[in-house]
Image (cartoon, rainbow, N blue to C red):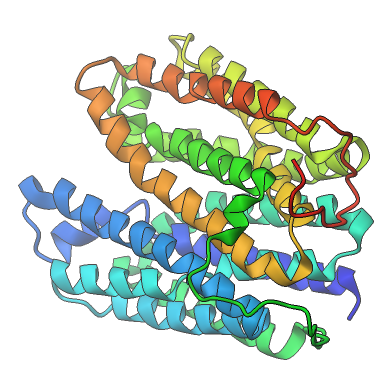
Length: 405
């Protein structure tokens, strides 16, 4: 199957997937209050539990699904995840109480693994010299869906009711599953008599120094993203000077990073192919750290939004570079496992970020927390630079030796 066709199909699937994941963000607290009967005094607790349980469970399950993808079929794992997620979102629109929604979100975490499966498929399907471009396009699609999801979710909830958004997300995930089933082809794998048996819960890839560094990087970066989530609407209101239209304004400020990410992700991917994925990672991390600190300086909402857009241009290079380094550092038979571990690292960061942000908010101003989210990337850049490979590393997508770097 032509790699361009595969890329087009998987990119479309990624956009729909990301939209379905993020549609619920604008109204989940209101859904708990208005439809599920949660008291306003308890809504923060329930929102935190319902969001975090999916992050936690899906992170734990990701390495297992990744190992099964390598052992059985990456396409099969994508179909499993898409179908099960469609069911969970449909059930989310039928629940009548918070415990039922918590149970649905728990099952959703068990079902997760679609994004790592899509990454594994495209990394195995793309030509070596197009790896960076393909991963950049996929990351751009993920970002685009993250921008469009809250927008469409908010509009649909306002027009047709909040339950309709769950049903639409379920429909989108079912469409993804059907498209993958009928249009994505997986090359038959040639049996390797020397291959070691794949273990379902196997962390042996952590012995590869490059993989270990990339997982640390993915977790810290994801934590920096989620660090500001609990306080961002309040900080936007502080800069604006009022709570007027705060949901709409906060949504725009959130999404502006996604807009710049859609623009810059493919460009970073191309630069990685020609210059080197590690060099791109160092540069994009450094730029994200600098602009992350700079955006905490302005005292006007307009300047803050502009600097977030600029910072998003730098940030867009991080995850395509991480995914490319993971790809070139592991064997073709380990793609599902390595992306499963990456997903686990990111989910751990997603759990720790809001907790740390909430704790910092109790002791410091919102402006300090915004600056910390950028500054925490500086030690990460230093760590990666000090531990960098001492030999020149190719950027062609060819797997490196297990003892490399």
